[in-house]
Image (cartoon, rainbow, N blue to C red; front, side, top):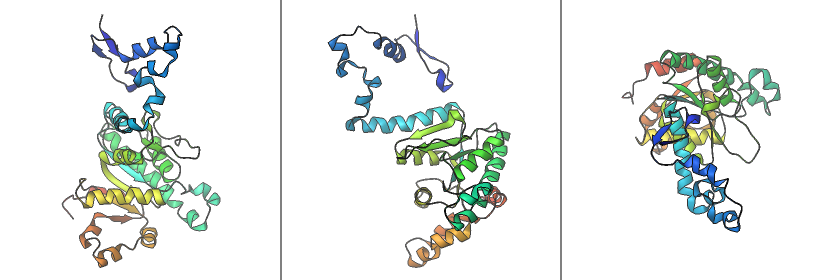
Length: 283
């Protein structure tokens, strides 16, 4: 009798094969007689042995698995492109700005609103294309990320959260589509998944993590390791305080033309206009 891999959790039809599948063997291995030999770690099936999988020598395998799992699930969900929303976890919603740690952070709360509006309008467009293009993708956390997932969720669309394990306890925000809520160990693989399908990148005020994500994406576009896409920074005054863009060009450490890779906006509607007017040959 033909066997099959159990893939229902990924939304696939079972893959038929004449060979006994790994799921069946994993279950059978749990029911073997209890002997000194079967209790030995050496007897465990390699792919079910957590201690083995966490060994230093298995890092290349773990990297590959972390690349493959979200890739396969997004492919199975038919997601062809995403709109990336980077931004600070500490940006409060307007109703919670009284809890902000600094007055300036409270002032930035209106970007939560703009992120929510942008994600909602972008998702409405996505749903007009069967929800496969321009799916909102955030880091899955609080602040701007929550606003992005919330706007997409309230529009009735699917929305992606790429979380990462951090030393403090955390959970994805409640607006991420559960079947598209991913968790990562490797920052590098997480950033790959942000950019592999990106049709546009938006960056809201944020801290070290936002800066890291922004500059990696800019570097890939600048060096033509990634296709040029709309690259939109919300809050020109904020970014002018953080980065002296003209000084980089004046010093010659970047080309003056590199500054054309970036568009500054204040509102969701301005960002949508940049996307609509985008010309990849315009730089």
